[in-house]
Length: 173
Image (cartoon, rainbow, N blue to C red):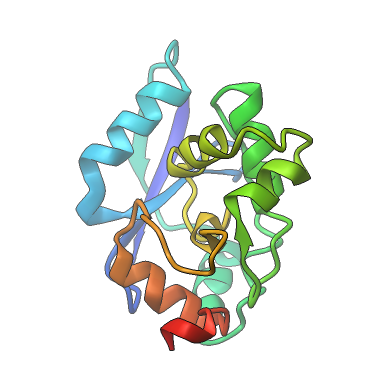
C-alpha cells in the first residue's frame, strides 16, 4: 500500500497524517506516539506492506486541520477516511464520526447506537484502537457518569480537545 506522510504542528503537539493514493486518511496521530502508530498499522492491515513517502498533504487536508485548531470544530468532518480493522471496529469508528463537535457519548450510548448495548467494553477497546485521531473523534467518548477516561493521545490532550470543542463535562471545567 502506497501512503503519503505529512506532518503538522498543532497546539496539542506535532501530528502525522498518512493518506492512501485516493487521499483518504488512514492514520492521523501524534508523532510522540510512533510505537502506537506502527502497532495500529500492523494490526489493522496485517497483510499489507507499506511504501511511505514524505510529501505535503493536499491543500484540502491542510486547510481542514488548520481550521479545526483555529476554532472551526467541524472542519475535519468532510475529510475522507478509510479503515482497516475488524467489521466491529469499523462499526464503532463509523459511529464515532456521528458524534458532533461539542457533544460527548458514553461507551454504553455508543454500544447502543451500533445495536450492541451490552458490548460496552468491546466498544471501549475498539475506541482505543482507532488509528485516526480527531477526524474519527474517539476523544468524545466518556464514562456514563460524565467523567473522562483514558485516551490514546493522553488525558491532557483529551481535556484540551474537549475544551476546544466546548464539550468538557461541567464537573471538569
